[in-house]
Length: 311
Image (cartoon, rainbow, N blue to C red):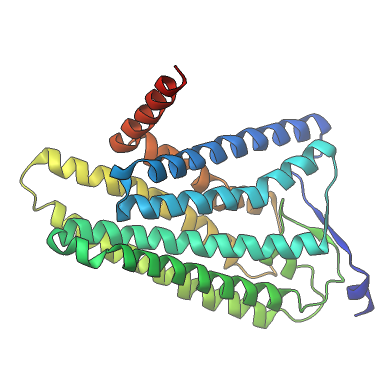
């Protein structure tokens, strides 16, 4: 237990021991971070400034973009800096903050994706009642509930993880601080922590997945009844990208978080972590902007307005 009081920092893993590859990974992460940040901020700006996009669908898309921008900011800048400077160290306080924020943003993103599925379900299956069911007040209430429960969820898991003593090693087998990797460093019994992660993961993640699946079953059954093929294609085009993002996010997250801590760490964990930490925030702006005519038109309008205003 005395070692626990002496732990002041952890060492993160790197994707390569070769200095040249470390620089390549650092620059790659930096480019992905900048592209993701700019893409998500663009969606936030467009959906905020264009009044035609002040609808529940784009309100939740704006929330998702804000979460994605914050989520990737918590992970990639530190990973890029460490690789660029060849410095693997992260202080204990930084690790606590990173775990809290990662868990909070993972939870918030999952709930946000679930709410977006409900929004699509109401819009397609109950279009006449859409304005009442998804009113601005209801949308704001759902958003606030998501944020408050996310803070409680992240605070509880972070506190329950750092009550453990870490004395086997201070090397985290991951490129950022996460709970499964930390549990492997504890010299005390982590059974309760693993059960808690399993229960909460299946409860929250499994519940959201079941709700999203049920929503899309109803959506697809309704869409298939639409006589026009073009209308069916438009409806499917708004749903399929969302399903892809949710599937990648949940499958990779479940695999990393729900495995027993006794399973040895490998590069596979780090690669899979990329799929739930980096891929969804990176793909969301591409999926929801390049494939969305309203957002593309709004971007063109903003650009023209700025050009003419300068002249």
